[in-house]
Length: 113
Length: 114
Image 1 (cartoon, rainbow over the protein chains, first blue to last red):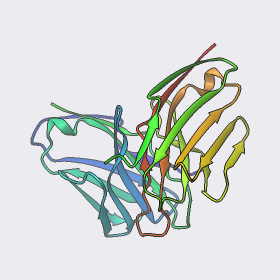
Image 2 (image 1 turned 90 degrees about the horizontal axis):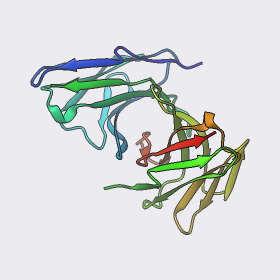
Image 3 (image 1 turned 120 degrees about the horizontal axis):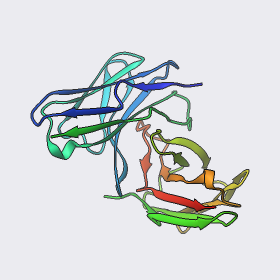
């Protein structure tokens, strides 16, 4: 079974802090994704990565960056946290073959005060 | 720009009833349409998926109906059970480009009453 692990279930940070969200997958998947989930808006793609050190912007990349130094780990970085980044953050991984399912972690609920 | 529109936002169904969730898409290049199920405190998980070369796909009590000309697809849950209470997301993807990410609908919170 694929396991996608997000380092924190709940996180509280202050405005202006630099915040790191970590995600690790154990299935050697090439593709990894970061989404944020907000009520009424569904899941919106922030960034994705299709290989080590490779990344592409999603639909809402502003205020975020990512890092993928190793295949199994994909980090989301909030450069200077703001209150409008309070949200549920979901990481997912997927193998390279077409139409394979995305496997999600259980999410990090981030509050910015 | 909402490329996949999902309705209703919430749904209450009696046990044994049929739950129906609808989605409409705009981009005719989409060619893969999965549904994800999310329980409270958990990440979404793939439930069922369809490609546009078929009009219907059934897996157990779950059926996707697909109408290519109308650019609509729907999820039907037959004999709905309290254990089906969850949030359901439709999604779409085009597989001919490098973008491997899904475009999700806004979600439907389903509550099945015993």
